[in-house]
Image (cartoon, rainbow, N blue to C red; front, side):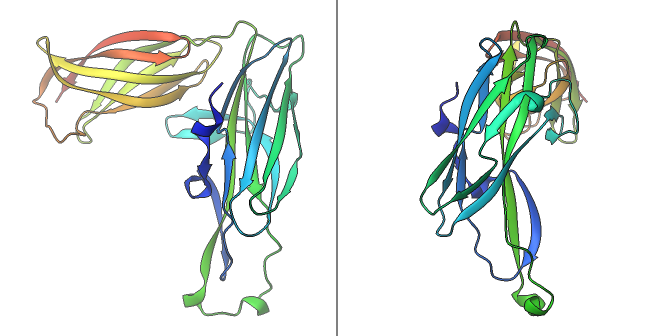
Length: 268
């Protein structure tokens, strides 16, 4: 299990939000964690806890709800339906919280998978979305445009992965495509397993047996049964590479092991 302290962060780092115009309203400050939950179901059940802390000076009211999600080349994406949707099997409470300043509220999660559920991974994102009072009327908001402020009404998502039975990722780098204008390489990684991988990519570019550049890409999620491009920026250090044939080699490291790769690329 990931240590919760690693995944706690203040509201200023929230990744999902909606914008609404309101004049002069203070913004709540909260932290939510852990941001990532990974569990192995035992006898069809997995449990966890989300902690929501109000760091502001006003009461914080929010609703809690779950949705299926995936990752594609653009990153995290909420979807309407998924074959790996955990939400039909997920119980969580409370579904609405009211937290006083300086206080913490726990949301308990219980995933109960059916005995007939296929082995593999099930996933959901659990959102905490702030609730505000109804918008002021037109008369009460008759202020000049210069005094209006943008209020961010955030929803913070905790992603939950539950593995049922024999569930493992099976990732492999299959191709590499160079974008010379952006000085990047798109490393195509397939996951033929029945569980997602969170892979760290360590890479090196070599020519005629001599290493010319190397680097590391932080954890990237490759969803079970899907393909994803991992972006390698070979121009990050400002060093231009001469056109020619190179070898891109390295390894993909996830909780299911380390997979080496070696692919030919051409810098045009």
